[in-house]
Image (cartoon, rainbow, N blue to C red; front, side, top):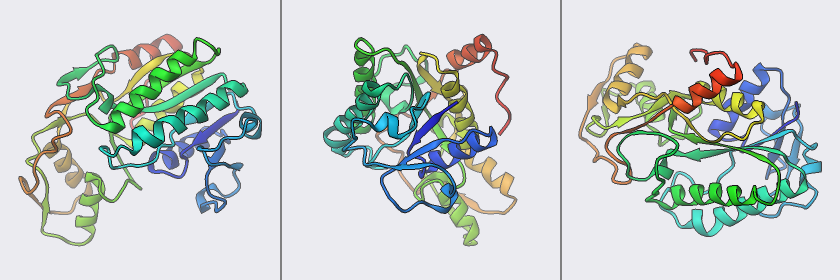
Length: 287
């Protein structure tokens, strides 16, 4: 199968490429830079700025059977109007160009922020009421692509991502901050109160789920990529410390709870599990 990937140099993208490698699938990468990072050495890389996609980009990418689209600029500033003013129009134009050129299967990374300030378990058919520009722009892109399906025959799977953690994550992420504190020999780790409930998966599990969906080349629509069970941030951090084996005291309450997220929400993975059962996919391995 011919697979193309955007955003392959980011945190999620690097792990997704490793997942494809483990399955002996050599993907074509799209990159804005002519400087190829070492981990992409030997792979096919097509240089292109997504804000100026050539009309024959689909052919330049080798006419892939499926595109896994992870690229998105302006993060982690979720509140920036950049997502609306810049990312949304250029993302749609980029994907429209590929679809017009012949792309027939597309998987796009969405976000749980599309749900907005919703509480409790969240299924894919819940109303989307995003409250920050990032979530709004992602949700709007999904709706634009669904309208585009009325004019072009292509399958769309919208992988709505919840929270994740793992090697290579941004320095400001909770997991990376804790790892840095442990490596530095800090006695205390400042954090919020930690009682908020979230839905976390290790990044290896996330890319495994996404790859299964992408390679199936089906029109699944929105699919939550989640654990399907809530965990308190405090419990999660404590489990990371226990797994690491080193000691550090949690300085809970050092930071306020974020005001752009509901206090308690998590994903409903019933649809994802049903897809796995219907398509005969094995249960995801414990990553």
